Length: 84
Length: 193
Image (tube, rainbow over all chains, first blue to last red; front, side):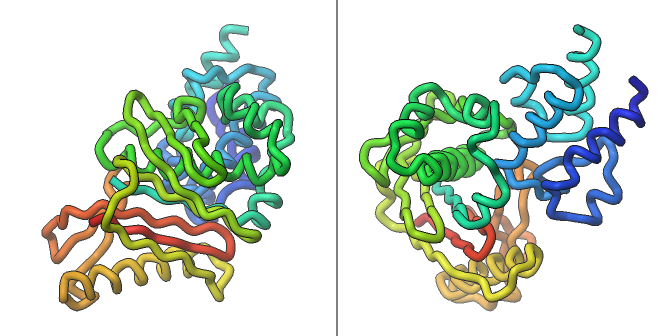
C-alpha cells in the first residue's frame, strides 16, 4: 500500500480521538499521538484496535509499545501487512 | 518522585467502551482483569487501575528517558479498596486513590507515602481543553510562587522531551517533582517536597 494511502486511512482512524484540531490538520509522519494530537492515552488503545480492524492485522504488545507516533504506526502497519 | 492522574467518570463513559472486544486484553494483565471482572463495579475498577498505571508511569518518566505504550508492563496490585502498588520494570510505586461519584484521582509515590506533598483537586468552569490546560498550569505556578516567595511572572513550566513538566525560574531549572492532570470537568496537581 502507498504511504499516502496509509496516512489517509490512519488519519480517518485517529480523527474521533484527537483534541488538537490544528495538529490534526497538519498531521505528518512526525506527529505524536499524545504530545501533538493530545489523544487521551486510554484512547490510544482504541486507535490500536481500530488499526487492527481496518487492516486486519494483530498489533502485538512489542509493536504497541512503540506506537506513539504516526511514523511508528505506519512502520508497524507496513511490517504486519507484508507478513500476511 | 510523584505522579498523578485523574479520570472524569462521566467523560470516560463517553470516550471509551471498556467492554469493547480487545480493550481489557490490551490494557490489563490477567490479575488486573480478574480484579475488574470480580468487582461489584467493573467500570469503576477499570478506571481505578488505569489511573494507577498513568500516575505511576508519570512518576517513572521523571527518572527514565524512554516513553512507551505498554500498559500491561505497568503491573497493578491492590492492597485495599483505594491503595495499591504499580511495578514498572523493577521500580515499585505506591498509589493512593480518591474514588468519588464523579471522578477517580490517583497519586503515585516512589516511597511508601511521601511525607511532604501538596495535592489539590478542582472543578473547571470552562469545558474546553486549552482553558483547562492553562488554568492547571496557572494554579501550579501560583503555588510555587508562594512557596518560593517569588512572583508568578518569574516562573514558568515547560515540558521536556518525555512530556515531563519542569519548573524554571528564568532559564534556571528548579529541581521539583510535580505532576498535573486534567480530564473533563476536573483537574488536579501534586507537588513533592
